[in-house]
Length: 193
Image (cartoon, rainbow, N blue to C red; front, side):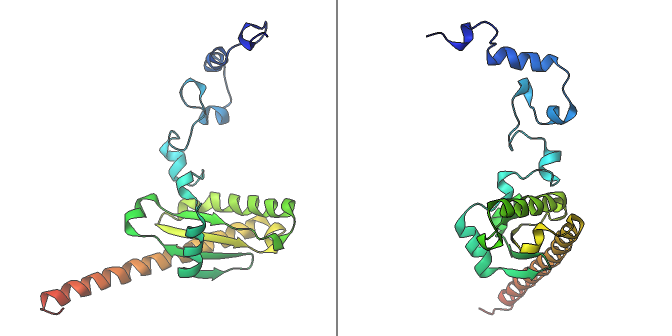
């Protein structure tokens, strides 16, 4: 049995990565490579791409079934022509992470090919406008069947509008929370329980 390293014409991985460092690579590839040609992870990706909405870091995704159920049960709904948004403000201890998004595409929307097309289109529209939503909010998006055929510009407009509404709702939520905290503070000063 002969090992790959001793075969003629086969270079070890280290030699290949070293040749990458000397080669002139397109900018798109260079942005995704870290030191010594290793692919970047969410942790090693520069902040400018991780925070501006051009990448979906793992911390920006809703992943657990319990998180989806919490948003569905306790959150608010926003109905659009092609998308339905469910949103819920997150607890303050988790606020530093910004928004987290989840996407659900029901089997009722078609076969796997149709569902994947809808998923890709919605994900791209959200990715382009994720930087507009910098508040600690959990958002679940349920597309409708029309999301697969509608013009992409309409899909983007709907996402932009929804993010504006969600931002306003979050601002109102923060103002109400601050008002309640202030009212509790003044009640205690006057000797009230």
